[in-house]
Length: 215
Image (cartoon, rainbow, N blue to C red; front, side, top):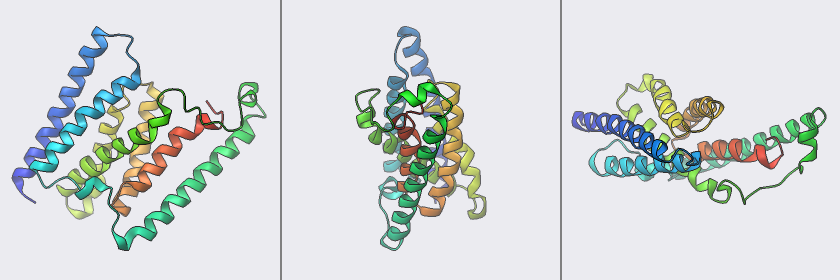
């Protein structure tokens, strides 16, 4: 690890956060009716440019952005993803069965429907993957590398706050939900050293509630 790389990493990170806030403030002032999804996509594009710069100029971005799974870890990663998927699906099925007994609005909705025709849901998997690559393979990985091995957890709130920024133009519920999700998935990332369990957790928790008529 080079001290110069650490300085560049943090300077680019701070500059990127500042640029995003300024750009989105201007955009939402000029176009007050712009959808929150568009603001999120703008944020992701700026962060992607930042990530590519850091990947070329420093040693702080995880190789392959955390997408590559080492052969020795492939079985553990697959099992983790399957268990997460099964647990989340079971959770939402149980929630639907309970809530439809008390809410007429929930009971009136289909028990399961994908709703791919609304709010870019058809491409949501891609947006989630981009967010996890940025939050984990770039940000959390980079912050962890600047810390002693036993202080890795300090990277969690840092990455969680930046991850929340991706949702800042949604409701307050989404912002706090993003922080909680980032903290949990940050532990997953630290243990697995790739983004795939984080992707499964993020995608299913965000995508399935509407599928089961919970919102």
